[in-house]
Amino acid sequence: MRVTQTKRVLQADPKSDYLAHKGEIDAAIARALDSGRYILGAEVTAFESEWAAYVGSAHAVGVGNGTDALELALRALDIGGGDVVITTSNTAVATVAAIELTGASALLVDVDAMTLTMSPERLASAIAQHSGGRLKAVIPVHLYGWPADMPAITAVASEHGLKVIEDCAQAHGASLSGRAVGTWGDAAAFSFYPTKNLGALGDAGAVVTNESTTAERLRALRVYGWKERYISDSVGMNTRLDDLQAAILRVKLRHLDAATARRREIACEYHARFAELPILLPPRDESAEHVYHQFVIRLPERDRLREHLQANDIDTAVLYPLPIHAQPAYRGRIAVSGELSVTERAARELLCLPIHPTLDDSDIERVTAATRDFFHG
Ligand SMILES: *Cc1c(COP(=O)(O)O)cnc(C)c1O
Image (cartoon, rainbow, N blue to C red; front, side):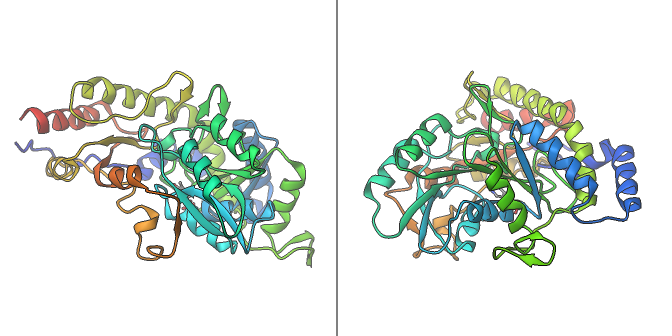
């Protein structure tokens, strides 16, 4: 049955988020333009301290994007050629691209069937079976806004002397047992791509860490390895945050908790309305604060539901349709540990429903009604 509607329900909507705070954002942009310092200026310094405080980390270092944040974090922790970094295959290609950009290679492990984040058991068996190349680090990804099992992962990592770099690109503000993501590992990478929970209006990213020597290295590595201007002490990159994006992020940060609260409200409604449907819903656990970057459901007839919603002017997304080890650029050459059957099945069955802070109650009603209608006719 096709319900006639005019307005599309968007899966993500960075423009409406801009419009919701247009006055404040436009004023911040004007202020940044007026400052006369456009890269690593006062807005960047202010955002870095505000972001470090928000995460609860000692230092934040602004960079060009989330991929660079991961690469820089790895390099600051001395990871490079000949090293091996363990991560998951159910992630943004950026996670693995960043590992390879340092010269290291990735070893992919399967995810937990409930949370779709790194399985600590599979991490332990990958370490036990590993041969060839120096195992140096682990990158757990807090995927869809759900924190990976950090107590178990950090325990396995420290037992084997491995560094932990958290990929927090989808989990701004998420926490586990009252401890925020980004504060569990040696360093953590954030992306502020426009559709992330904290989004700039262009590319932006940050690395956070509690270690001051790591922070110092990050600050040098992001700008040609300079400690002193024009003198490179190390071989660095150019991945700087600009003041326009920092000024915009400072405005968005003031509204982040309210935006997260709205995402949770929407998720709560989806959970309630879908409880008896034959679909797998996102994990819920009292010890974890999910920030619902995505609301991911799983069902065998995923493609048919997706078409049904599309026909009702409701956009959905599949993050991600191909695990990294099945992507043309990586297939056949990337190292995997054991079977990745949970990852492969999830890629066939998962669907990301619309969830963003500017969805209104009638949008949510349309998504829930159309989804229920798919099962009940
Ligand atoms: C978005 C994302 C990145 C990369 O961030 P960019 O800013 O696009 O470079 C890395 N990891 C995950 C899990 C992401 O979702």
